Length: 115
Image (cartoon, rainbow, N blue to C red; front, side):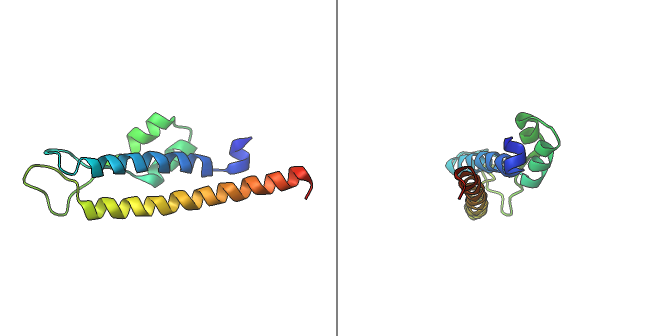
């Protein structure tokens, strides 16, 4: 029922949540020598999940290492501006998805109550 009721938005919310975790990991390791920043290709992960892949398979196929604009001498590829921008972009998408789901739930609740 949740797939027909929420469409891809439930899956999108899960992926956005996982992406936030990955980006915060990048930010936390900004000073770690040799740390390689990673991100999720959101559209590829969503396509894999809606195509029947498991969550782990979708994440594995859509996780990419970031290519730094200005590599650091210690091998760390985290660039704070890039990570902060990705975090903000993902947070907006997460909020929009939550708002859609909230609206859908409110509509169903009103229908059940007969309003």
